[in-house]
Image (cartoon, rainbow, N blue to C red; front, side):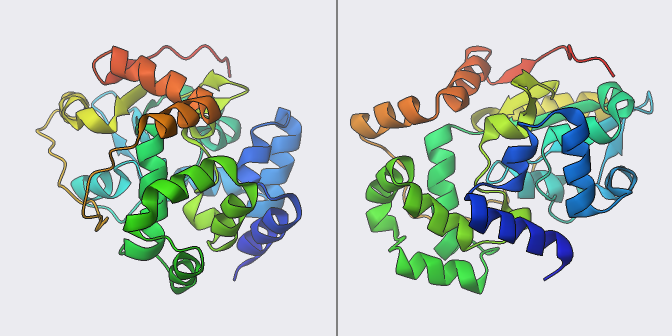
Length: 268
């Protein structure tokens, strides 16, 4: 395990919180210092050079902010790349504000409860799940037949959530960070273009326009779940109570037919 993962795993065990989540709560100098501690002095330069991007005819970066379990594999395959890492938008903003503000940043978000169900399914059924995650699935009885009960546990049992996080490599999965935190800095949305998982046709149209070529997303869902989640009304009510910011953003995107295009108010 490398130094970065050791730091993140130690942090998770001490504070039961992902380092990504904490960085979003700090002031800019402290967040930058923490990024350098975890990832190295020149991480910002390395990040922008390493992270896969496309450019449009105006030489602007088309930057995909990949939230776990939100069509990332399909988008990567559509671009002909390996799967994207899960990097919050504010990492790009903090390390090179002007370049980020000049970019055409976009993301895909998912109905929050369905995304959690997909996360739970990952442990036992995903092509990408690790051996340790499969062991977690066995210990916590993460079976499809028990999905509704485990969704209740995820929303109400902190110890259950920690056991899930502790059974992954935090920097690889980022499961403990919610969608809202991936896209914001101090509760201000950073990403300009937000598309719903339910309406990826809008994303295809937008990318085709910006790339000036026809873009089609391959269906690359690695989940092997047999049935589509149909949660009971009490579970939906509980999810909306526990994930207020998640649903506020999702509802706003869906109210705009599954595609939301926002101005960026932050200054470099």
